[in-house]
Image (cartoon, rainbow, N blue to C red; front, side):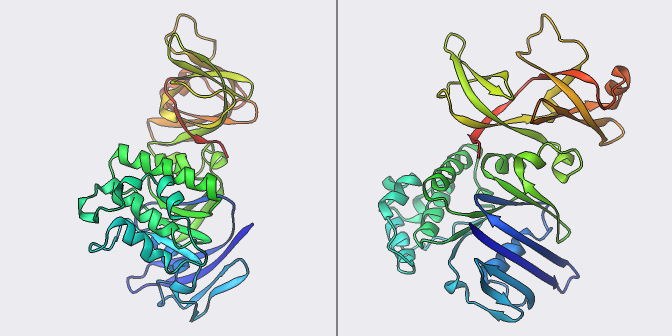
Amino acid sequence: MTQLSLNIEHRDAEGFHLSIHTDLALTGVTALFGPSGSGKTTILDAIAGLRPDISDATIAFNGKNWQEGSQHTPPWKRSLSYVFQDARLFPHMTVAQNLAFAAKHATAAPDAEQIATAMDITALMERFPETLSAGQQARVAIARALMRDPDLLLLDEPLANLDRSAAAACLACLRRIHRERELPMIYVSHQIEELSTIADQILLIANGKVTEQGPLLELASQVNTALAEDESAASLLAVEVFAQDPEFGLTELRVDGQSLWVAGSEDRGNLRRLRVPARDVSVCRERPVDTSIQNVLPVTLLEIRELSKAHCLLRLQLKQQCLLARVTRRSREDLKLRPGDQLFAQIKSTALLGDAR
């Protein structure tokens, strides 16, 4: 298992204090999530060896010290690759030449054809960067990073400049790479929808410190984290594809032994991740009848958190997994909601994401 130990203390000229002390088992994709200016990119830069001004730090990867105090292993001697917000491709080289340049620094001969196929860039190999779309450039940048055959891949908001379609294509490629190569990744973003698709574990960063860390599926269903405060707060459920209804274009999923219906077609038996926005979940005391909402699940109310003068957040237990519901305080008072209540959750919309890991 890949291990990363971070002990960083640094105060910059503007007074920002970065204080990170954590040990990570990098078994999948680890996300760093937080608002702009919280220190996420600085953490990545320190791991990569790009911040020699940070002298009060110990960074160890798989038992090998990459930094101890002011003693730094140079970036090019660290077994990692870094993908930045902008692609930073060599403009005078074709895509194939960009990849070949990175291969010169690989610890083992990379399979260029396999990487190009996984990143869906085989048709781009003879083109120059200026002729590529932003999404194509992002996929080439990731492919070039993989050509170095790294033991760790760092990604700093690699989809920040992409439209929704291009970002979705890039995320699909990254998931494929993760499945095929089991390459540990550290992924920075302040878009929780993006991280919901790809991350396995998450570190919540605020004001230069780790405020929470753990499996994403668990933290996403908590009411007292920064994830819950976001307008786009959502639960993540591990589900199994159970059956199809081709007449109506629906797929039946099973979550904790109960059925959910989503649009589209999926192969039976697949284990997937389902994103359920808290704002699209309502509750009632009796099972509704004659309703257009297809997904109604019995739940137990576990917790209530006040979000604002107008809204509160409910944590609802299915069996082993939990849902969040964002409701008005008036609704809570009208229904006289209390922890322990047996309710029915009405789910108005969902998004089926990547593999459940």
